[in-house]
Image (cartoon, rainbow, N blue to C red; front, side, top):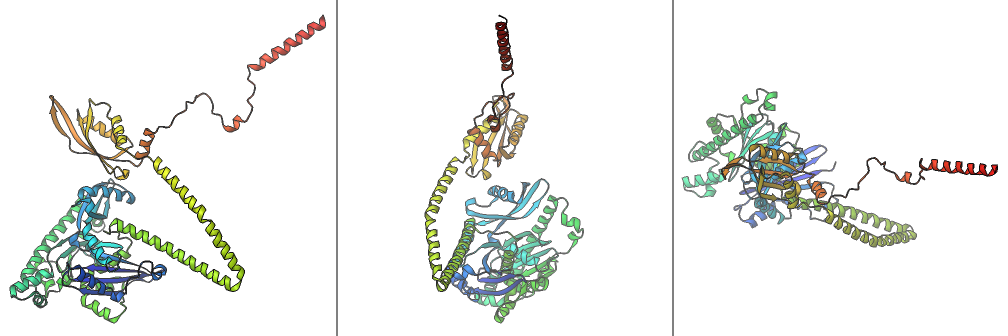
Length: 607
């Protein structure tokens, strides 16, 4: 089994961290880790220089097209952590029941109305799929495209190509799953600017949020209270207890935010149980709801003296400091085996801050975790690059084999050289036919594309007009179509005006049974009075079925039909080759002629 290496990067406010994992037949092990600090995260040059130093223990990534990159059997990829503060989440319920392949298209359509910003400015994915007999729900994860591309551009300046972008709460969940997290657990990762709050139950993420409170705000508070600079305050906060002034004010803010977060997590848990009526996990384990939760603290901000004890007292929940590396070594088969002793020393120093990069790397190695906010165009470029590398590697290997064969043939027998030249000549002769074949294929593909039927609004208008023949009962208006260039995602919206509820319901039934329209839904029915008559109005939304293109094509270009006599048997080609027998009506005529001739001959003899 070829080794697979993953390098996970977490770019924070003042610190960038990197973790290198290796997966082989013997399991997963951590082989390297490093971190660098910088003063101003908004200074791109400063951050880029720091990231360049970050790669030094790992060695420079091989350039694209390098022979080492082409023929190296050990695959390697780089994955990036995205802060929870840049991510939005929302549960989308009441989606139609669908397979995994169909669900992606359904979520893409539904996300347009649920995203907190413009679709063209967003990158989104989904996870935590929950299915019932007649509906599906997912949790939508989205972020602004600019938030991701800023990180990608920064890494590309250092020659690093990212193959995945994992939200930090997904990474924390993956680390917790490998750290013996068996109880309902509130994980609080306190960073420099923000604190990430995650509620994990049964190994799954149930709730997460990020709030703006971290180590920097504590340093600023101490600096203001003691009238010292921020550098001195950053050092002083390591020695002031969480319940002592001036740190106690910051601790009170943290407790307030945690109380809000815990209340929101419990509310989400109750709502999930209500939606599923009988939660499967609780049915299997009736004591699950009575298990006492825990709080795990991690991140640099968790190092405030006595913070865990103060939170446990104020929140009345068992609280502990969480060291992800130690927990993974204790509860999983993942090995912590750095290449050098000084790396191990650094790990012992800041292991409690590695939850996010470690989780990003483990998520990349776990095929069950498929949550990435990498832009689609970047992912497609990576796929094309991988294919090109395979082609180049195959071509390079072929060139080496041919070169070796030619060299060996030249040294062993000169006649082999002549044969090799003959083969080369034949290959050159094939170039022109191949070019002609490619040209012909291009023409045929172009012709096929021209003959391919494309849906137009007239096709849809014609189909609707056939259904709305009786305009005295129902009529339609305000017709609107979006994404018609991609029939699978096309959305059709129009308003109906009917003389009664039954007329509108009847029309909706016709739409659902048409075989052309699917996902037919209607808004709220309203009434107006016009010319002393009550008119019912409703907005209808629907999509096109997979067979709509074929149906519209048949209606636009009907095939000519040849009339066929139902009483006349159809002749096959074999029957046409057999001479048809003489008809029965002809046989009596032949017998009468012969009898008449015989009588004439007898009369002549009598004479």
